[in-house]
Image 1 (cartoon, rainbow, N blue to C red):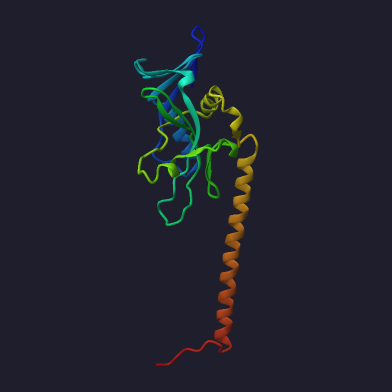
Image 2 (cartoon, rainbow, N blue to C red):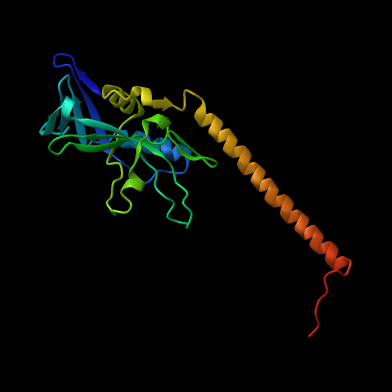
Length: 224
C-alpha cells in the first residue's frame, strides 16, 4: 500500500481505521482484511529523509509535520482483558508502533491478526522481542480511564517497513517465518485435547463409581 516518491525520497504509508472487533472464523477474518484495505484510508504518513508528515489522503492536505529527529517511535502492545469473565485473561496481544511528535503528531499503528484458531485465538505475524519492553497501553492507561486503543492499522509489510524506518527492526520477530505461530497452535491444541480427555476420564470414573456404589448398597436412598 505504501508508495515512494523517488524525486523527493518520500515514502507514503496509508493508515486505515482499526476494526472494533476481529472475526473468530478464519475465512471471515481474511475477507474482512481484504474489505478493510479496499476502503478509503483515513490518513497517510509521508516519511522523508528529514520530515514526517500526516496527510489527508483524499485531498492531499497537510495535517501536521515534524522533523524526523523530533519524532519518538515507541514499541507498544494492546492486549485487552476479557470483559466477559472475572479472569485476567487477555484476548490477544496486538503489536503497535507509537509515533509522537510536535503538534498533533500522535498515532498508534497496529496490524491485523494473521489468523485465528480455536486453540490460540487471534495470532499476529509480528511481535516485539522481550528486550524491546513494549508499552502495554491497556495496562498503562486503565487506571486513568483514558481510551488508548490503536487508532489505525496498516498492512503487515508496511508496519514492518515503518518499524525499520524508525530504527526498531531488530526488536521485532516474525513469528510466522520463525514457526512460532505453528508451534504455539500445536502446543495449545495438545493441551486442549489433553484437558478435554482428562475431564471425560474424570467424569467417566465418577459415574462408574456412582453406579457401583448404588449397586453395592454403599449409597442408600433415605425414606421420609
